[in-house]
Length: 169
Image (cartoon, rainbow, N blue to C red; front, top):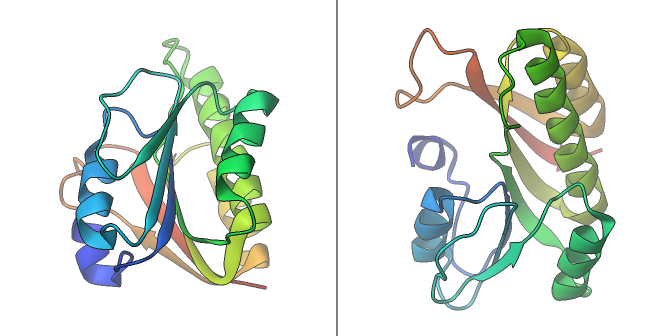
């Protein structure tokens, strides 16, 4: 909500994809903002409660069948906003967990590059650490504007941050 208030990410009628949607906080907030004229699709490997006015795909974003199902639901419609709150199941091995998180962020970026409208936005949660700078640089190459967002809800000592990319090159 803090990021949306700062950057006005969501508005009525938008097409929004929420990757890593469980437990559903972004979905609930986005549905209120985009209303019935918008299209909201959430994807997660975890089960989620149905949300009136939204579509939920239960499955692993790494699975090509899940991506195909998402593409089918979009049809010819371009996406206004891709939200990615995906995070790997933590193993406790910091370097391995970091690389898994980067891999998920890369997949989300690739999805956004394929489906975003030219003026669309991509908001991705990422953890600072090895691979962060290279990932950030890849977004700078693909988008006209890139901002770092650290909402107050995220603990200051946490490596968690969000990158907001806007305007496809």
